[in-house]
Length: 383
Picture 1 (cartoon, rainbow, N blue to C red):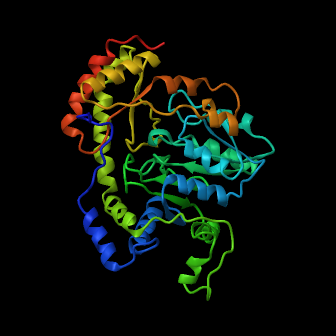
Picture 2: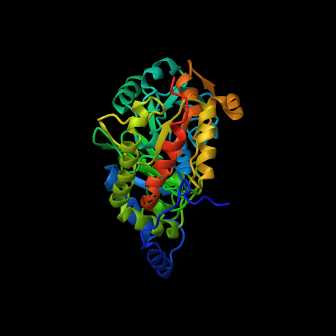
Picture 3: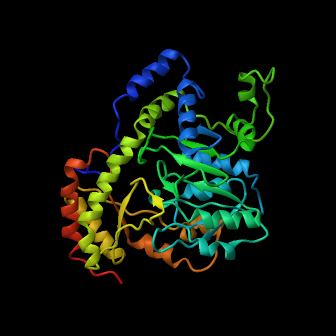
């Protein structure tokens, strides 16, 4: 039976169908149509980067980044184990080895103090993942990467409209990947984007995105015919998807503000339970402006989390856990390796519970909060 208050419900702003009709009327339904161009310009402006290229998904953007980074067999990529499988898969597909390190106990982002020990002569890149739209400690990461000659590829799937020390997430490293999946703040059902911080990678990125051909240059009149010149694949979304995304991008600030209002209501109403020691709320450093992508609580143990999920479901409310650590997964053991103890990763994976947060939840929010308070208050205190 469907939940009365699901964990996620995609929100539409009201102009999506009109823009899709415009795309159909224009007669350009494949990639790089008029709406694709609008979205690309808007994303580049929002992030202050040289270029933003729309992709099928954030997974596709990460796969493009792996191709642009020229990683291959024998290379290593440092990343957190507490992330979605796409972060690792993009590099494993090129033959590289993901090297998993622990996360911080506060923000649940990659622990920048663990990176140095994970670097080897085979390391090619560091991939920070901005968990819940809260920025990793990018200054430290960038200093280390610069000193050791490493690329930084930001997995900013959850980071649209969030900043670290005033800089948009996804635009600080060499390359950044965004997601517009239906669970994200700004959405197109499926979709993503690759951010290119400077101009030096634009030409090759266009080639990789166009099946390894110089087709983009051909359509600009820069070459008289296009041909296969490099590795690549079909990473372009249709202009129909871009039309949907354009409607959302026009209202991105409004959507973020509405989610932040929900987030702050949760945070306010659960503060006393944190003071009582029965849960922990999210931690957001002062130098980070998050986007309310997620509201989670951390409970005493795995058994309590399972109980709370069941009891909320019995009330018609959807709440879910998050990642199974990649280093503990069968493919993680096969394709990657871990460096150091990953105790914070294991701790978070067993205790973290994500609560519903989506635009339109407003009339139901207090009911959710009351249910959370009723179920959590009977649990054991945090250790």
